[in-house]
Length: 342
Image 1 (cartoon, rainbow, N blue to C red):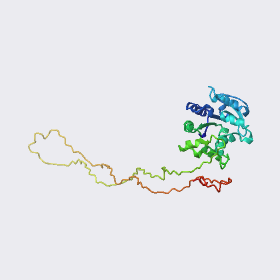
Image 2 (cartoon, rainbow, N blue to C red):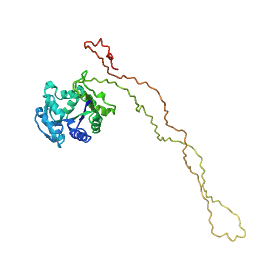
Image 3 (cartoon, rainbow, N blue to C red):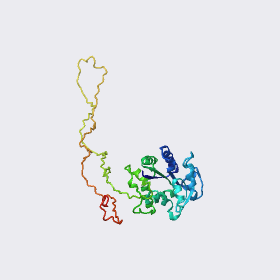
Image 4 (cartoon, helix red, strand yellow):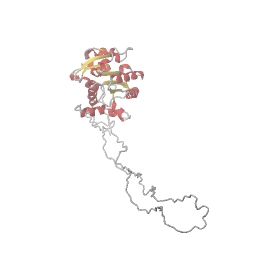
């Protein structure tokens, strides 16, 4: 049964500590978990024992078996090229056993010996240097998915995305070496951000066994909607002065007195009664009325069409060639001849 090394970088120690606790609750052996954090990044507030140097790292790992928990076993280390950190777990013993010397490669060397690609090992070291906390788990096949799922639930950093950000800021990193053991691309299919965040690298239980993964990219073409322009129709009011002539009728009352000389004869009975007569003057004035009429309409609608477009890109894959120069290999008649893996 193969042993797998799964790593995840967290920005805060509290996130890493919570992930470790959930790993233990999920049935992962506490001795299979390791944690390394930057003391300048807030880890110094966590409970730990200050061992002072890497040579006492084995003692740190020894206190993890009881009920104190992994975080309670944290001890201080000074790693060349990284500086003071606090760590606990099996990776500490690996560092102490290697002497943590520059020749042993420090944390990068310990991670690569555990099966992490050199490129990601440098990135994890840089993440710790910038205040992060690294959780590393060694599990067998039957617990690989369990451990990875637990780490993914705690939202680890996207290590590939972080590398791009750091490189944009001047960090050089280190290129991947040909034949490095393990690669994050060999992970099972998961959501892309999570797959980049958790580095799962398998190494055989036999330390003499090495492997080169055959990696192939797959192209997935999707669609997204983008704004290509806008049409806006706005209505507004314009006042236009108009003139129109109309004939108006007007009445005026005239009072006229004229001399008359005629005889009434026998005076009528009402000849000398008081009376009143009157006339009313009238005139016309203009009356203006307005009525609204629709003379035109402006309508907005969309004409939806489908257009085919060919997406062209390239995908990469790795291939291997097997050169067997062992004596008698060329004349062997048993077994299949070495061939390139596709």
